[in-house]
Image (cartoon, rainbow, N blue to C red; front, side, top):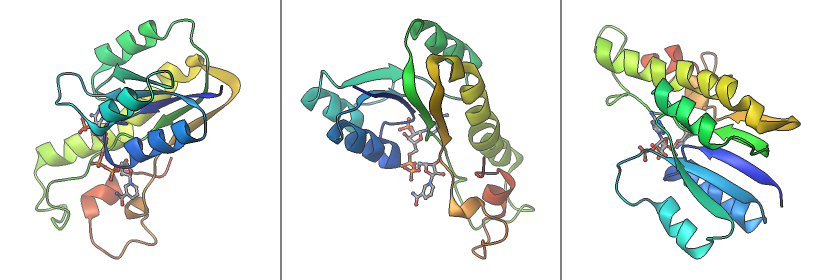
Length: 158
Ligand SMILES: NC(=O)c1ccc[n+]([C@@H]2O[C@H](COP(=O)([O-])OP(=O)(O)OC[C@H]3O[C@@H](n4cnc5c(N)ncnc54)[C@H](OP(=O)(O)O)[C@@H]3O)[C@@H](O)[C@H]2O)c1
């Protein structure tokens, strides 16, 4: 059974990916953030207990990344995919308007942390396996006419 480590699978596109990989017969280890409420991924684990495991990770917290790396000692995945990402509370704000706190949060979550996750967890993937990160058309400078300047600055093209 092929296996994937799916980072940020609690809901939205990450959860949808987990559903699809399970449907295709893969073994999925999906992460949620610790301490949160029950998520759609928990529902999927209930119906597919032999195919889905839930792990915990906040990608912005290095100590949690280190701990997850340790818990996965001895595991070898066919694929690692980082879906976790966020957007700023008001996508219409310009760079002059966005708060420094919101901008820094966007950069740490969408730009720095996915690269850290890949670097840290890459040795849990077989050498010819797949490493992937979710991108977004909103992160395209050339194609973006919608004006979410902060999102463009925190690149989603990896
Ligand atoms: N929706 C779109 O149209 C679209 C299009 C292109 C690309 N994307 C990209 O696809 C990805 C998912 O989008 P979505 O629409 O499914 O978003 P979403 O519904 O807001 O889900 C975001 C996911 O990322 C997780 N996450 C956020 N910050 C995290 C952190 N610090 N640590 C760990 N997990 C974290 C969330 O976990 P919690 O449940 O704990 O918050 C959730 O599982 C994003 O990277 C986004 O940029 C989205």
